[in-house]
Image 1 (cartoon, one colour):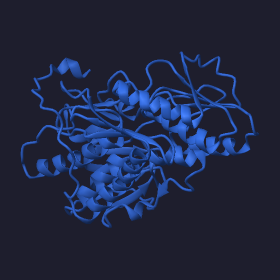
Image 2: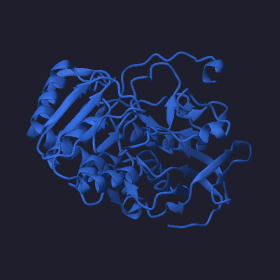
Image 3: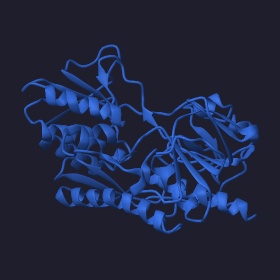
Image 4: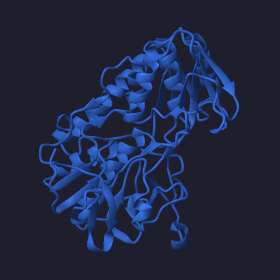
Length: 380
């Protein structure tokens, strides 16, 4: 990985699903593209529950196996963005100029309380994996959270460590976006795996009695956008318009977990790689359109299904409308686990396919929207 800093036509901040997809689309069209990331390797976050439990040796990939050869990979982290000078200031003290910028810095664990480990990032997953291996038979494990990360982590670990009682603590409805029939099947799978589900809020200062507590409660995002004076929402995510461009900043686009579309009608988009990859590709396409003087279309992406891993041989698939609401159709058991694995493998194939041919990656369309102009004050 390079360490030099220069001026590039497009600088992409972040080497996750959105950033890598954007880099491939731009480089494949002959654009001078820099991907700036502090990570030495690409992390498959959708595999971290497998890695944590010990079923996968390495959840990372060599960036060069995923990126177009023309992408300049630069090691480093952005400390601040100076839009007026089209400059990114790095934590190292260096600076990098840009003509266009894609903000795709991703998300991280919500702050874990003392005594708990957050395994939804690679460093936390490594620590959790190490501590799991050190548990004696009978020592208890607690997983706190009610979303997909918590459920997949709990099921995977419970099946891998059957001699260690595991309790999943959820403050509300478990995976609330599921249809009730799908949730019932998921709960039955958790029961078969040996997971005890406890309803109730966990006080961060009074953690459950367990030898290992895994904190899977929500995501946080870096404060880079806020520190740089760019518009953010209450969660610190960069606010972009329906074309993924920052209002008032014609050359800055946002994609992935760290960005949120502020225009009406986009609240259905969750923080997932299935949202991030289309956003990354669309942000890149809109930079190309902007260079050609073409109008920028609104972002249009949707969903077909949500796949949940409940161990290597069990799972649940909830089929969805484009707007991420559940349909009646769902699949459970071995068939769902196979489908989940196929989609996980396809994720890297889509990224590599975009590296081979810019524009190769396509995605499902979203729900029909009738967006209305948003008052400028709403972006504050």
